[in-house]
Image (tube, rainbow, N blue to C red; front, side):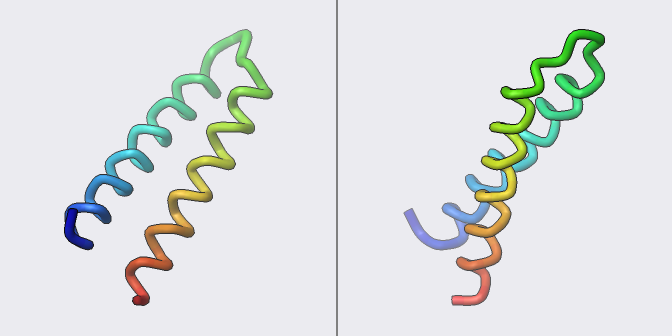
Length: 55
């Protein structure tokens, strides 16, 4: 997998998590621990994307 396709895959996962976070956040009985885990993963993906872009 080349760098560009890897970045695209990471961006796709990041966008997917953003959608899932928004959906979970809007639920009346949201799962706070799952929401926190998804936010941490989203941040990790963002950091990885930025790291790869600067290489």
